[in-house]
Image (spheres, rainbow, N blue to C red):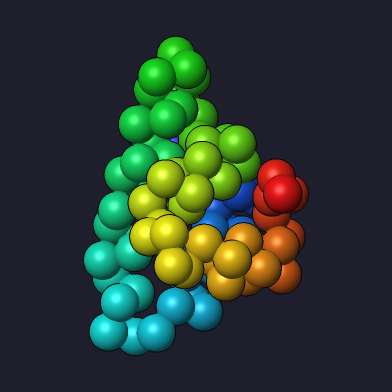
Length: 80
């Protein structure tokens, strides 16, 4: 599935901040979930809303605040 260019760049920036030993798993899980979110909307393109929802759903509760801060710093518009 194709990703909107700006969203993919933000996704890659955010993934690059994750510790190396967790990075591949986070990229796989969040990326797959973002594509599932886009498909569920009937979209052919993964958009920022799909990526944000993926990070929220795939990040364990103890790491939510850190993830949201990192996402904002990566350019995502995160809900409070």
